[in-house]
Length: 153
Image 1 (tube, one colour):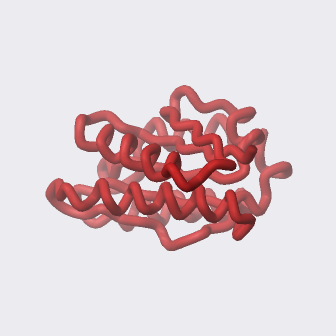
Image 2: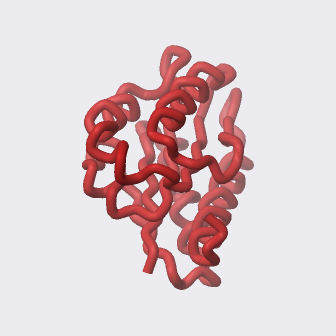
């Protein structure tokens, strides 16, 4: 059994809907060989990342940058996972009220340093809330879980 770790900052009802959609996608009934662990950045410790076969980061855009708790996750875990998790398949979604580029750049810089491997371009959910965001995030969860299950990444 492989583990997909979803570290999601969900401070509002809409961002919680995104987290739920991600988990639903990763737990799609056709996917059997993946254990999806979905938790907040505050709950996540280095061992969670060390035990993961893939990771999805979900964050809000706060003041043009990633959420503080998402940054805290990287601050606390970076050096503990740096050498052991190079090549970790990863994906990102950003719930951005504005354009999300500052958040995307910040996380891409950290992921480059960690030497994790993007499995798709970051998903930026821009502007006013749109119910289609949930479908996009659910699809991301399914894609990541199916790819891990089938050894694609």
